[in-house]
Amino acid sequence: MTQTAHGVEFSQQPSANPKSAQERAAILANPGFGNYFTDHTAVVDYSVDESGNGGWHSARVEAYGPISLDPSAAVLHYGQEIFEGLKAYRHADGSVWTFRPEANAARLNSSARRLALPELPAEYFLGAIRELVSADREWVPGGDGEALYLRPFMIATEAFLGVRAAREVSFRVIASPAGNYFGGELKPVSIWISREYARAGRGGTGAAKCGGNYAASLIAQQEAEANGCKQVLFLDQANDNAVEELGGMNVFFVMKDGSLVTPALTGTILEGITRMSVIQVAKDMGREVSERKITLDEWRDGVASGEIAEVFACGTAAVITPIGVLRDATEFIGSEDATAGETTMAIRTQLLGIQTGAVPDTHGWLTRLA
Ligand SMILES: *Cc1c(COP(=O)(O)O)cnc(C)c1O
Image 1 (cartoon, rainbow, N blue to C red):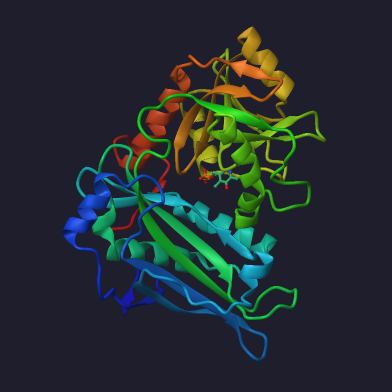
Image 2: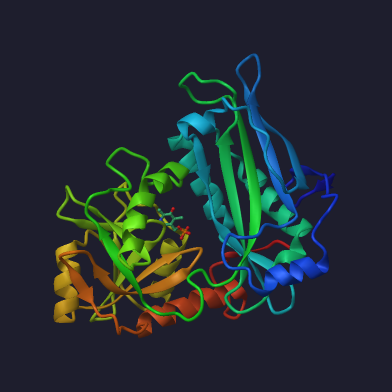
């Protein structure tokens, strides 16, 4: 047992066959994204007792490996699942840090409420991340743009086909070394407009980080790829084609006057922690930021007139990615020769600098893990 700084005890059941230093080095030489996983996983279980009281228990770090689930487990039938994504960064002195984990813990709980899953006390969330990264600290890469991607998730494990919120749930964290998400240099990407499919509707789960939203977005993502685009943009077609977000990233516009605009949170948009950090970093740079409705018409006309100078997408995995072109069969907005905009790059450099320890962390966003 170890006592974490947050007061939750995780029992330690180390892997009997961790990767050798050589195997690990071979993986870290070219990790890609989401391909390889570390030696351990952190787990906390939840169950409801006979008198109806629910509680989290059995916090542990154990060997990474397949999960044994009853075939009737609720998650396999009704999709009661939520997840998070954050990164651990190796700083120049070898220490390992993560970025705004309390915000991920809070968002996990707001997703939990929406999916009728139990809320997880923040000390378990932070404890699980700290314990896992401590066990697998050798897996945190230190190269430019590299990090250990942490994937906390919660699933309904109860064996029961009735339709109701499950009474047995498991929270887990797995970790995957990550290189640059889109690979190589920071080239603006082309984005496909989804006309036929929405990822979220009013009253739905768009503001929750749940696997179901991703399942619903894959067909649109396939359409984007079939048309040579990297990602898909979702619009609120019932609301003047208001821009929502990409499948897993929020969108920002840099206006001619240097101010920034991002779609207001309407309930169908996921509130990214990168999004909230970009807003703060831009304000720190003296920029005005407005969260408001911005339509496809304004995007097209703004790029044509020069009113919109730059467009970028943001999220934990890829941090900040410039958008060069937005298109479908009838639209072509932007240019294939676009290069990354100055403001986009300045914000990216500042944010990455804070995360990697190259720039002072004036907002107290970093938490040391190991
Ligand atoms: C996770 C996610 C984002 C980005 O959130 P970050 O906290 O910045 O990583 C944006 N949109 C969707 C749909 C997401 O699932």
